[in-house]
Length: 94
Image 1: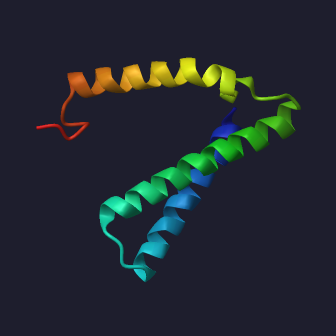
Image 2: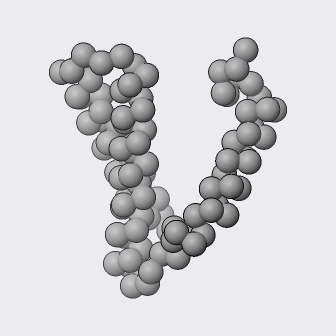
């Protein structure tokens, strides 16, 4: 479990570092950069998770299947709304 956290966290940290390195070479506003880096970090975290546990446990990752996506996305979206409703500073709502 610790190894998995290190691998996934390391891929996110590496992506963040690369995003900041690229930012110094390319002029881009902060919002665009954050969207690109955030999407890339999400992709890299998901990819490293799938590859690591497919190799390590030699099984399919069913948590991320298309069948389970709707339920998990709905729960995540609802949790995000609740967090934003309870703490408007997190969601930058004035």
